[in-house]
Image (cartoon, rainbow, N blue to C red):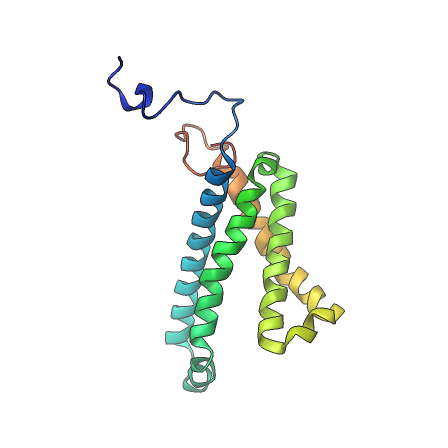
Length: 162
């Protein structure tokens, strides 16, 4: 019986290049990616908080807990959605389109959270969400697709074909 972890009976055989990952593994990958982005946005927000003026801090302080919760819960849920669609992200166009859609949706949800649910019926909110969330999400999709294209990346390093 082999002694290496990759060949042990507990690890099972390594999937070949055409093998599919379990759906749960894709969703877990997406949640990890979403939480990474939540941490990045929390860090950017903390820097903005420190560098911002006192009036801005006073206005944001009353909504800070909800905003942080949105970053982390939204990151996990958005990541789970992206992870569920991970098999489609093997193609660059699909990854960019999915990222743009998720980014637009998350910005629209932020607008609904801050302006009320009626904001989702306003076409201007969707235009702004697409203008800001679309390119940001598309860039994130491109980045996730590109992770799999790195030469020498070990299997499971985080890209769509990992």
